[in-house]
Amino acid sequence: MKRFKGKKFIIFISILLIAVLVIYFMIRMNIESAVKEVEKLTVKKSEITSDMILSGTIRSGDEVEINSELEDAIKAVYVEEGQVVKKGQALAALETDALRNKLESSSIDLDIAQKELQDSIEDTTIFRLEKDVQNKELELEIVKKDYENAIGLYENDVISKNGLDENEKKYLSSKNAYEIALKELEDEKRGSNRQIKQMQVRKRELDFKLAGEQLEDATIISPIDGTIVYSNCKVGIDARDQRPMFVVHNLQMLQVHANVNQFEIHKVKIGQSAAITGDAFPEKSLKGRVSYIAPSARTDSGQGEKDVLVKVDIIDPPEGIKTGFSADVDIVTDKKEEAIIVPYEALFQNPDGKYVVFKIEGDRIEEVAVELGIEGDLEVEIIGEGIGELDEVALNPDESFVDGMKVRIKGESK
Image 1 (cartoon, rainbow, N blue to C red):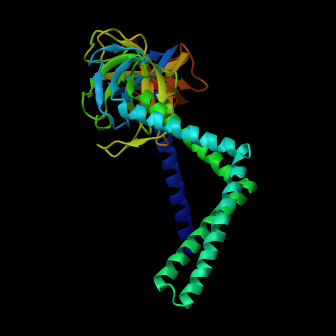
Image 2: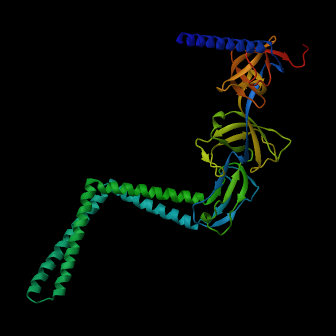
Image 3: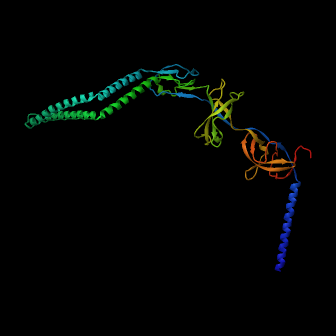
């Protein structure tokens, strides 16, 4: 009985194997005999660019907000909005009476400090202090005798306690004055007083310099060539209360400021060319160049995403272009002159994420693995062995395409 069951098992396995082989050869015959109609495209070698389109705002490439920290009132305003100004041109003037007095006072203080230092250097200070110590010492001897006499008079009931106290105060005051004069003389001889005088001179020099700078700052000037695009300067009001006093833009140096998402910023490089368009100049496409990429990202308040500021210089901006206009920037992020390119319709992405194209060889297709290079709007660069210029590839491949499959070109006779 066991031997019979074993034979039945062997027969079952043999039948199953034959069935599998039959099914395999049938499928193979169907694949071999199947003919799929496809569209074809000839691979070409051409220039390809990759672009990034951004929306931004036109700004001046050289703009400045002018303010003053002085509390003095505005005396005169010389310019108005829309006026073209030169670097160094006076825009307004402040009241200067208090500033001139401050400058004169600081000059006098500096002269005094310099004279005291010079006296110390020439030892005339030591001579003066020695005389001062001698005088204080003589005064102390006189007052001390008076105080000692007062003690005897008080003990003999000749003077009152108040009289004794008054003599004691004079003695102690004279003693303190003598000790101070002696300490000053000792410090001067050690040079410590001279160091203090040197520091005092330095401080007075800084005060004098600051007073001079403030007097100069009383004339408000433009630090750049440009146009007054905003003026908030009014006569009679303190300068520090008018912020900003002026805003100046150089309208010959215009830029587009745009934000690039953190995931795309690696594509942008300094020096990349760009085309600039806008609703305010619909018939023009201006040339531009990336000139600045911010060193850090900032959060977009609307979406909470991280963006990086990019500035694109407008080359030879025409008249009529104004700051504040919105603009679109098409940045060429990559470019290759002789690239093997195909339309995106020629690509197929396998489940493993890798890309292939199906090259047409006679009446069959051959699966060729490729990598993507520069990605344009309609076409993409492909890189891989086995595919080159003038090769023909099938369009719109899908899961039914199999390596070695027979094909017929759509539109061609059988």
